[in-house]
Length: 308
Image 1: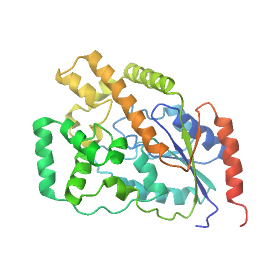
Image 2: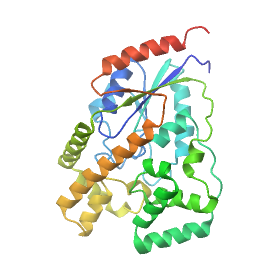
Image 3: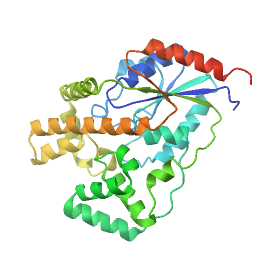
Image 4: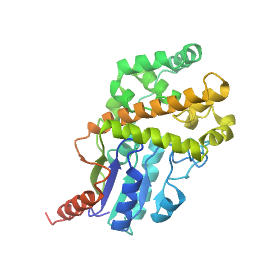
């Protein structure tokens, strides 16, 4: 592929308006969108993952929405491979493509590539699983935050498997997972321009709280109930689902579950921003600056494609 193609990446915290901007850009540049949201892949999970609505999906072609089942293992490496294949296809029709999401690791997988991780000690994994069964996630979280704060800052705090995997890796190798995830950058046969969305923290938190209320009005509890038989699956160990499973177990009230969803989502947004702020290639805008983003991109793409 000649390097006259451009991938536009839209990053930012949950509920900030990434989907709306992605659709605006896709329509303006007449191209397609790759979703890099680690839960919107799963067709069984819709309300709690804040998938684009039907009219939004109709406004621009999306990839990796409802593309996999919760019963199918789909790793970050799988996403890297499949997303690059989709990009190749999009670039046969368009000079630009758009990738949008709040999952920093998935965005990095496509833009930077992932390193192969060394094998870990299965005995350590068994010990950590036993610790989780006996004492829950808190001791694992504390150890992981101390050992690898960079990885801890962006990992889904309700995702037991990833938390254990991060600590297992450190205890087995003495090295941080985060150091392998950012160690080297693979060369891609296309240009990359990164856009980040941010806003004042109180406004963002207000949007998060409002979106949780809308999810519940749209039937989030009913969706969670329909997935109760599969709650042990990794895909469902995430914010919005884990808290309502606790409510269904009778360990917390409905009101407590709702407040925990809001609180845990706000915490997740804070970790997302921490992750993205480390990327000096991101150009930051507010959600109401779509015209400014378009002008910036048109100038940047034109400059990138000037003969050297």
